[in-house]
Image 1 (spheres, rainbow, N blue to C red):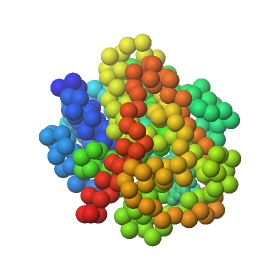
Image 2: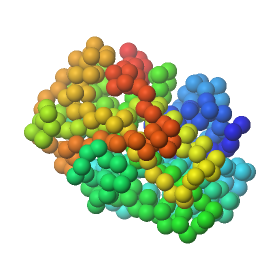
Image 3: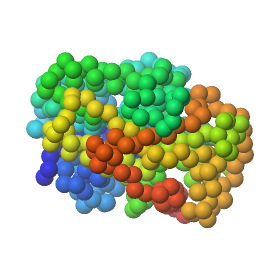
Image 4: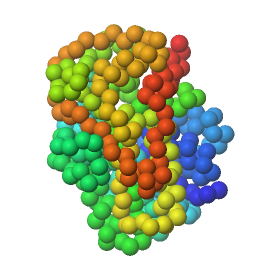
Length: 341
Ligand code: UFG
């Protein structure tokens, strides 16, 4: 056993893939998740993939008493990876207090417990949303953050600020924030993947559901952007590659090597891909045609963003490995499995 890691939100999309990689790397994992956007079956699937069952606790992290009880019962926790948060951009505009209360209080409660039980290391799940629409591409970690487009995005900015201030004030705690670009795809086993609640907001689940016949038609939001084919550009990162970045971040924290109190890294591929480009890559990779039509722009969408990944490459020694086609095929295999196709 290399260490005991608490993964909050560990049954969610990125969390579950990270738990698999942690267990494969020899870490012992404890999960806390309220199952507000995932199911307990994910724990079985993780066990099926890795041969090891993570220790699972179901509650919401706003409950400080339960969280303290978990830290107390767990014994020595070496590090925490904090995924647990609400993440629907549109819903956050409708219900800002729900988002601020949940996302900020969960982090604050986590720090309270880490301090009380002398847990030193945190990896935080941040997002390229903190950059807004940058003036210059690709974005480096030096690119200034911008006022968030949504309360959800603002919770990522404020959480980063809380971590900065808290690690500054508390010499015993060190943290790494990973700023994800657009995570897509599924585990190659097709046993875990993205399970959106209801109608998907994100592009790839909508694409795979359309190909599977669950949705009649994909709407492509705008083809009049200032990009080569007029559709928006994103940096789509394979979820297993992203999960591996968390394992490396944990190892870096546990090594305590050349570490300043709070570091942050972009985690993307470095390649900008348009919505229409992704659709043709999907058709190429899977042989499936996707019924789509061009509609108007979606409010709040960024025109183009992709990562400069030099810092993660050089400092963490992390590289994205999967091709876009491999990743889209993994997303399709997952969709087929859950639709029993
Ligand atoms: N898109 C469509 N049709 C759809 C869904 C999406 O054309 O049905 C387009 C969007 O307009 C955008 C691209 O596909 O151009 C990607 O959209 P996603 O919703 O998949 O991803 P976003 O980049 O909008 O959002 C992601 C995360 C958010 C995060 C944001 C930060 O899902 O949590 O990145 O930039 F806030």
